[in-house]
Length: 354
Image (cartoon, rainbow, N blue to C red; front, side):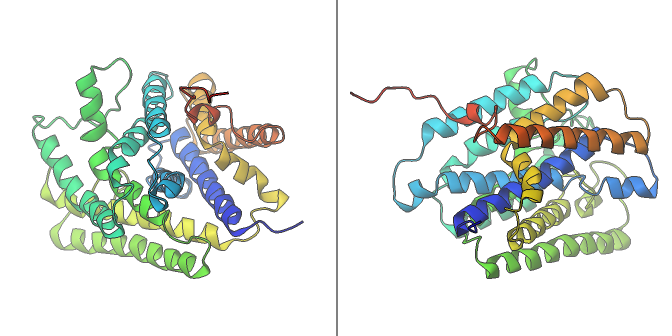
């Protein structure tokens, strides 16, 4: 079989990385939670990392989607971008109403696309500067907002039943995925999408710098905590030294994003994603939206209120992943796009003249 072209190889590697992100989010969202067993710590390795990888890949996808408009100075695909934003926002808010006990990530993904439209033509330096400001200044703004809530640390996700103003502030400033912080990996993804990702030297640099970011941020956190002590409250200044997953603090954003870049570089290094044995993972990544929504439905309708033990969690996660992989494989035998991925394509507002 003829090997895939460089562009196709890049897309397959991105699909595989997206499949890994979906599997990680399924494991984290399924649980169980609150278990201190050593094996459970390994089971939760993707906690706070899989979602950052998902957002990073989202930025790369938007960058690739608008590459022609940027390079040829054509108008941006406004209709497609705004349609995607509206669909993901409304769908995410509706899905948050289900009893799956998961903070749905689609709402923040939608607004990240909307807020980053002005950056799609920005210079590379501007992208990197904005991503850095989000990682460093975003957590400070987030803490400042929290300090004005009388000590109430509101991290609950917003849903369709909430008032519009609470939906906006819950996505942008507070909540489990505050845009002011999570813009960092998304904008970094936009910049990465401009690189020649099929170049072996680029993937090597991603692996090296990703590892440096992940290990360096964790090491810096341990050192600073050892010197200044643990945070005594959610609003104490020592919290800035935390690298705990989903703490929204700079060292966690840098370390988690570094691990995401490392995984991306490793996936780009692999040249055998076109092998039939790898197709279930690749197809899962190609149907990432369908798989993500599917796992929420499985959690809400079948799994919850469990799992109660680590073994039950492993079985539930593995069964969900295998079921979604099987569905993705069967679907891709007949269709190019997933059932929900098709909806992301904006409808034509006008017909071509005959």
